[in-house]
Length: 238
Ligand code: ATP
Image 1 (cartoon, rainbow, N blue to C red):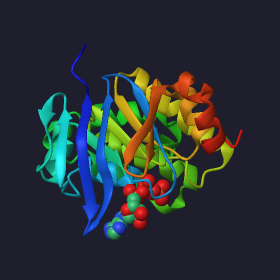
Image 2: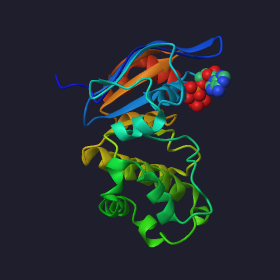
Image 3: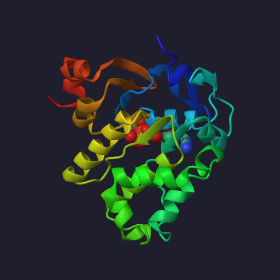
């Protein structure tokens, strides 16, 4: 077996006295597209923020390509290759699309090749190339999400984490975005995606995890999860 691109072992994280993740373990194999689903408040964002170095876990291990990550400041985590596109996008609305993309290529590893990377991002999202000189606030919600994903790609991730990329998007934009996420995986980037859009994300995922009350309650391939009666009733209302 190859070393997992990302492995979390027995992770415990809380806010003050309140524990949110209670011994969570999961793996993301290299080159796979992995979905993490779970109800609101289950702790999905808390997991990403812990891996990103924004929260300090109380216990457990986080390994990126087999190398321990926890305790590293967020910029080091990005340099190591774990890059997150946060929920809510967090773009700079008054800066141009091109400038927003360049912000993503700030780390040392990404800076040298940034024009090449930008060409790859433009190939994935041609609208960003067409509008590159315009300020980000002129983009529609779906286009802004593309920009947020593009900016994360500019950091040259080995593991790209997306926090609810389809949130608030019209169905046609969700479809386009998911198609781009599939292509990103096919380009060799390992992808971990948090989604409320359970049916669509599991249709494209190689593997999926269900997070409930701070632990993984179910894990299997995308098709197996979609066939699971428990998952179908709880998350698909079927
Ligand atoms: P959502 O889909 O709503 O984003 P989630 O699964 O990502 O849900 P988290 O955002 O990780 O869930 O939140 C898990 C729990 O931790 C929630 O009950 C939330 O209220 C609590 N929580 C999140 N951030 C903080 C914080 N900064 N301080 C205190 N509690 C927090």
